[in-house]
Image (cartoon, rainbow, N blue to C red; front, top):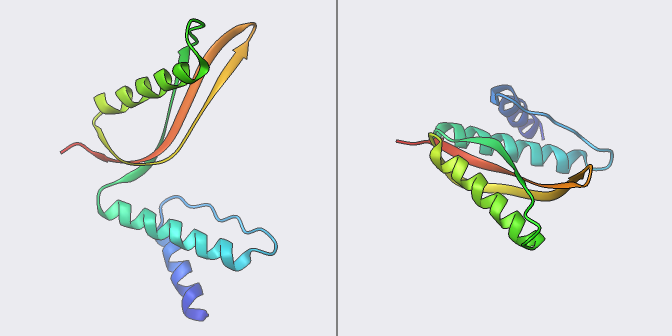
Length: 119
């Protein structure tokens, strides 16, 4: 058990940006999950990769469906990433929503991804 805590302490000390939230009743599970995330972060760093968040907002086209609007927003978001100096290695999570403000609709989409610089 001491080896596990030593490994976690070393991993957390070497990780650049880490937040550990331990909930009552899940101390061991949360600690193991945090250790896995720190390990993945270190491995990505060694490969020259990093985890980043991307988001994009576009106007809503009422002539097409919500699904088509969201797909268009995600497509534009991927174009933004592709013209940057980054290569997308893995998409970790995606989200999208239709925002309504003063009767105007806007599509917002976001993703968390692993990227690396273009060679």
